Amino acid sequence: MSNSAAPTARTRVVREPQRAIYDRPTIYRILDEGFICHVGFVVDGQPFVIPTSYGRDGDVLYIHGSAASRMLRNGATGIPVCVTVTLLDGLVLARSIFNHSMNYRSVVVLGTATAIDDRDAKLAALRVLSEHIIPGRWKDSRQPNEKELKATTVLRLPIEEFSAKVREGPVVDDEEDYSFATWAGTIPLTTVAGDPLSDDRLLDGVAVPLYASNYSRTK
Image (tube, rainbow, N blue to C red; front, side, top):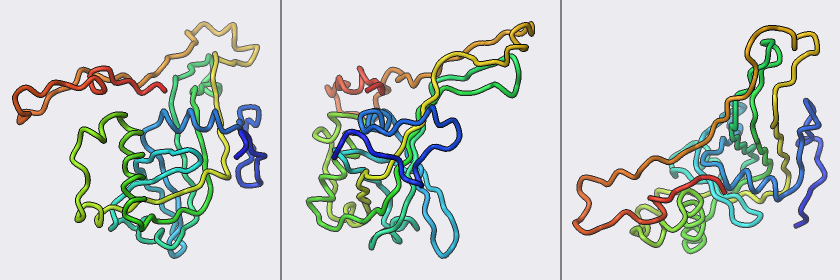
């Protein structure tokens, strides 16, 4: 697929269009840094938005959940979905309340998601999901057994129709407000991992792996 896509009527950013981005490298950087996506879908006329984990492999997004979930039950034969991921990078405090904002990076992916039935393909997708959250963990862990595989559904969503919206930078106030005597600026926000806490029932001699002790979410 090409590195960019012309926006469709559904993905074109209308409000603040100067913040819109339609190239795949930017989209993928945002997706690869996030943890949780929100999946929007409609069942019998009722809209639902469900938070869940995800992973990306090339131009495909994998969405994880329980086989008993409403979304995944209805996605077995294909379901139109809207998947969003948002990273919050900072609070922007302006002189006026109206001009307060946030620095953020967000992605919207639209398409039809289908459930993965093939056992090997499902295992491969679950590995993508695991490696997305913490690279290196899959090979150190017990692999899913047949009961666990049956209880788990993974949806496959091709990344074909998408857009991103990014706000970065300083405060933007109305010119007349720059003389207003109040502090203005940005408060950066980051996701920082703390020191790993070993489980109480850890076997003797099992050390904290480097992927846990050196964990960082920044891609």
